[in-house]
Length: 251
Image (cartoon, rainbow, N blue to C red; front, side, top):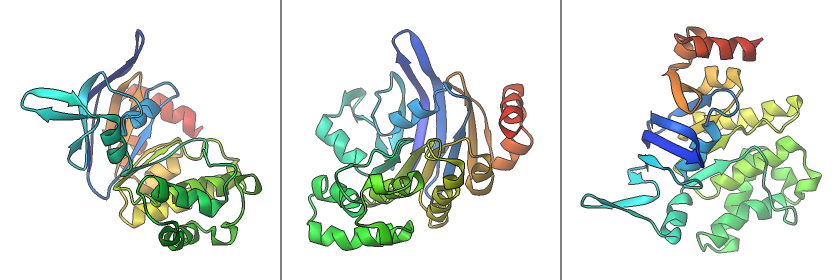
């Protein structure tokens, strides 16, 4: 479903990604761990071309991200084509980014109507099903200001699912939540993983990574320091940099 090959990204003279490679099979969950500033969120934004990479290549569902190849020449895609491909990749951010003037139901409906040109009446039923899936059917007509942070994030997940993505990206989806609200969002993500959704998750939730992930990637200073199964990376890390990070987080 997803492959990254030696991806590089710089901002000015600062090289944030220094040759990151990764493969995620269809139906797998990959968790990216690491300290702040290690390049995790930047990498995630590169997956759907919110950031343009400076080197290497990425593929989602067999299509190269941001480019097409003609013989030996790469051509950058036009924004319309980028947007078309991006529509098949769901992304949930640290901040919920809901439309404050629209209800939970309207937030979920908006994407399919505007981007996919579907009829509002057709989408409404699906949107209600998605809100029910994330446990918020009874909050459909509430505005974001009337919802808790955990509820807003669950609406954001339903909104991403409404676009029928083949890949879901999560950028530290619980980092802006109060501790007592984290569990309700992680439960929805666990349900998604159990249903077979392909997911790449940037997180500091070690319990989630240990329980749900098929593969864990530990990043630091723009490179993948260590990767493997959750048991291998979290319980028996081979690199000192990984051991030091885990000791601080778990403490």
